[in-house]
Length: 282
Figure 1 (cartoon, helix red, strand yellow):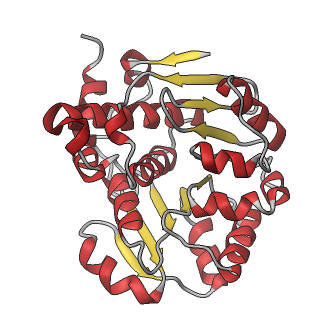
Figure 2 (cartoon, rainbow, N blue to C red; figure 1 turned 90 degrees about the horizontal axis):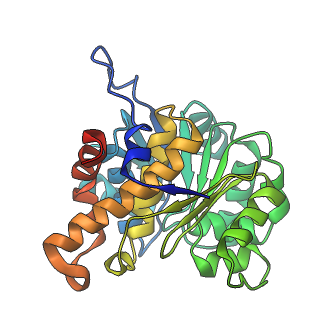
């Protein structure tokens, strides 16, 4: 297992192209949100922007689109289009995120499963994107030749494993799932584990209990989406995003304490965490 530290992340983040433009740094697409869950898409999309994405498109239900139009300054929210158009937009993107605050209904789950099967771009599944796939795990298996990152907490991982207990060896459980289903598994929690289907695993070294609040996972999903969309190789992008997420959380805890810090505080400290990594050891 590789321990992910500041020197590791330093070598994962490329210097930004001086001649680059917004199209250079990744065009990403997020499908998220539902009535009562407008914070999740806002957090995920802003996290993608703050992690460096050039263009962030956000598809949300028509009912909450006016709310997201106010919440989002840099991301581009729009009502979810008809399925063929949505699939086309996703397949024209450099990476795709499905799930934060998406809600559960038969129609939503069916759409999610169809997208998982048909999206060709690198795909991140979080929250209700995971829950939809957990009931149709064979859909995940169809993506073996395409990059898929699944980001469960323990409860979601239990559902993915059809109720089978994780056990004391979290690394072994994460790796077994990644290998069985051909995906990258980010098992969130204290010392988050990232497992790849080829057997490589990564142990995160940042983060604190103040991050255990609703919304923190949405931020992480947006950060993973962003680094993948910028073309950083998965074995660098995913563990680096996890480390940066924890480092931003540590900066927020330093300023506000673990009790009072919020996911929004964490979000605003992503740039400082990235700079910390870019500056290198010491």
